[in-house]
Amino acid sequence: MAAQHRLPGRPDRQAQAARQLRHDDRPSGLGRDPGRQTLNDLARLSGGTGSQGNPGLKPLKSKNIDFSLEYYYARSSYVAAGVFRKNISNYIGSTLENATPFNLHTPIGGAYYNEASTTGGCGSDITCIRDYILNRYNGQPGVTKTGESNGHALGTIVGQPGDPVANFQITVPANTQSNSLKGFELNVQHAFGNSGFGVAANYTKVKSGLKYDNMSFAQQYALVGLSDSANLVGFYEDAKFSVRVAYNWRDKFLAAVNDGNQLGRSAPIFTEPYSQVDVSLGYNFSERLSLQAEVINLGDSVLRQHGRTKEEVYAVTQTGRRYMLGLRYKF
Image 1 (cartoon, rainbow, N blue to C red):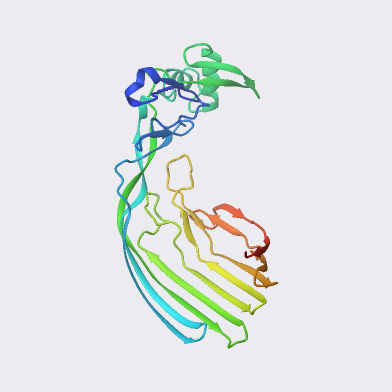
Image 2 (tube, rainbow, N blue to C red):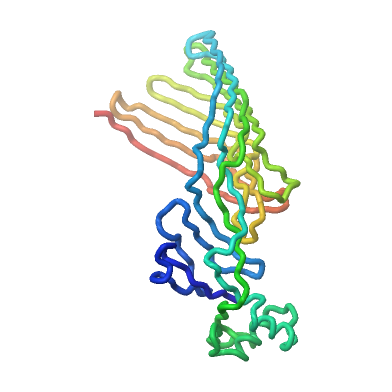
């Protein structure tokens, strides 16, 4: 079922810009102010969803402290370590607000619906209720039957004055809380004398109080994209040739606090630990002309994302190997 509503084009010109919203309309935002409200497609039995800006948002602020030490024990060779802390305030998350925007009416629980449920003997059978209303009240206000398919009526049923007002869960950005982010990083690079061979590695460990609690279904304000990472690189370079093989690893991290479902519930998306190997080669024909070749994701690694558990697979992405070849000339 779809609800018929009237949406103002701008709040101060409601009468002139009113229009009907049917089941196949996608309402656009009102005006151009940052507090405008946009509703998603249809209001379901449990209501609808939408989003709204917040002109009162404060900018995210961060006070950072960093401390690092470096020691160069040989030419092109060094070790380094650092610690950092970021005190975050005015963190911007999303909140859900129940609202009845524009007093849009829904046929759910209205006169036609209740008659079909009781007199029509449909109870809570939505297909039965829809067939009853379309067949019995076709042509009446808000009811248009367009045909049949597989023994069931097709058409639209829109809300009328006197029907219940539809409830919407509106997602609104908000300054939610303050917290901190801290961690450390280690770096090392070693060149094997004048041979041209060398190795480099780094590791970063990071943590924050803005974590996602998998055991809670309440709204949460977690920091997305936060994870540990590491890289290991072997290289060779001389006046003509250069070769670089890199292993890149990233630990599990929260990719989104909501997977975009229409039920208004917090449903996270986690990206599982991922690693890949990249290889690059270079050759200098002269001081001006050089050749570069690169293979990205040599091992054809697969990226997986899941919900609250690993069994709740959200996406599996396999990009395959990527090859790049180029010539560079310096004028």
